[in-house]
Image 1 (tube, each protein chain N blue to C red):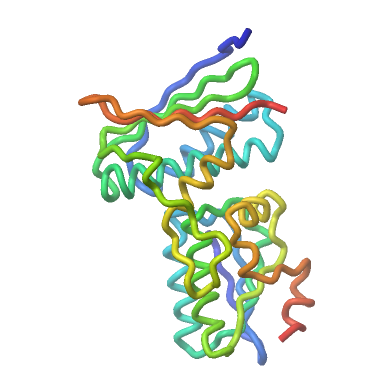
Image 2 (cartoon, rainbow over the protein chains, first blue to last red; image 1 turned 180 degrees about the vertical axis):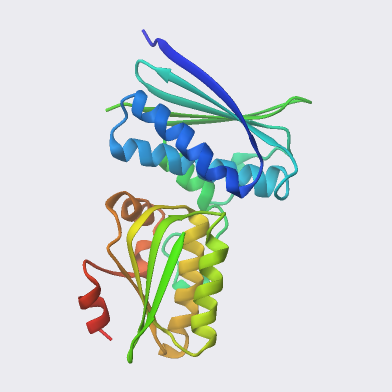
Length: 142
Length: 111
């Protein structure tokens, strides 16, 4: 049975210079959850991309809201929960990135979400009416 | 992020250290724009001391590659890309837009 060993929660300003602090918070938890070095990097990258999406798309720019980050160190890996009060989105409607296109035609759309999905074992996104948005990312320890 | 730029006869070498994310990508973009606006399109980017690159960072490199490859006037070559960074690059299919070298001398010598 999965057991939660430790939970911690921090609030970060929705701005790009919070990203390093958020990644460090997550990396420390990932190491404590005994993810290997690839797993630690993957979780940091997924969380960074998710936070950028919150700043760029949910809030529409820097300094317009907060990002709440909760880590749950579990017996089977690490769960990171990101919460924001910005605009919601439908992950199903984000087009996949244009993998395989010639260089001059390639555009950035959809890469962030694609990376998030590829980097973690499980991604869940929910928009709670009047209470903001929640993204949960889980990475299993190997 | 720290950026060190050296200009050689046949190419420019840009050594980066630190993290390349949404906070630092604009700083690199400005530097690379400065080089390409000076008409120099053969670039070697040494990423040996870069420990994190997000998609915003990759887009700076891809946009610079587009500029350099236009009219076959040059190319961006990458050197010393750390394994986990390389994995994420390959995962989103962006690896094919760059030649990756293991050492600076080979990359510089290829121009």
